Length: 151
Image 1 (cartoon, rainbow, N blue to C red):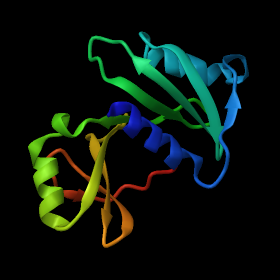
Image 2 (image 1 turned 45 degrees about the vertical axis):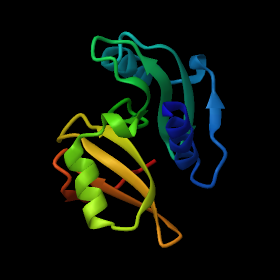
Image 3 (image 1 turned 90 degrees about the vertical axis):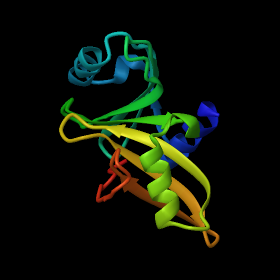
Image 4 (image 1 turned 45 degrees about the horizontal axis):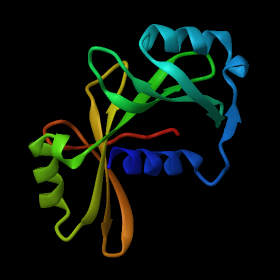
């Protein structure tokens, strides 16, 4: 299930363009340093670059064991955010209940936790509602939040 969610996240990153796949040696040193500082247990990240940002697709093997994720950095090596696909069973009940209450009749919910260097984590909730794909952001208590995802 996580692999399907992660694949869906990858599709969102495309944003109408093919991802420019780059090998590790082409990633700027400042971004590599930031990534190694932020995720020292990560091995073999797969890097891509779009819209002046760098994206590392990897498995986190730290004590936090966040699993499969994508970390996003700006061109200067500043960590923007990280996206972690969540299985429905791992999502806090307040997030699930609040989203289903606010969007009755929604189907095919997917949940991605967004961790940011500043600010509390958010959940990106994607669902089908009246034959339209919708994306909403909520905090860990299920309250709607504004978030401009720059990827």
